[in-house]
Amino acid sequence: MENIKIKYFSDEIDKVEKIVKGDWIDLRAASNVALKAGEFKLIPLGVAMQLPKGYEAHIVPRSSTYKNFGVIQTNSTGIVDETYCGDNDQWYFPAYALRDTVIDVNDRICQFRIMEHQPEIEFEIVEMLGNKDRGGIGSTGKN
Image (cartoon, rainbow, N blue to C red; front, side):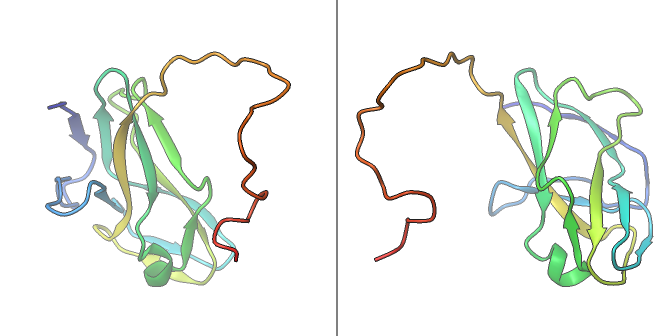
């Protein structure tokens, strides 16, 4: 089992905890944030973490984030590597509002999981891959 050290910047958010079902872990807004449609803000998540060596965190919106708050994550997926672990390296959610909204302290707005770094790889240039074509981009699921 891997160990993650966690520092909290706020006493107003619930502590991060593993969930019984699924492998993504919820993160919460650490301050009240009001956004107008078309506005961008970095929403503090109130935590800094020291990930295990060889791991990175992938941060994405929860499935209900857009429905509940009308915001999208501007970088699609946030990646936090193991070196972002200083005492002031707070995690943030980069939000872009598509409608006027208010996010309150402790609202669950995103989630994360940790994954091992990509293994060391090398690229080999070839003339042919030698595999059957699947039909091009967007062809999966077509009759």
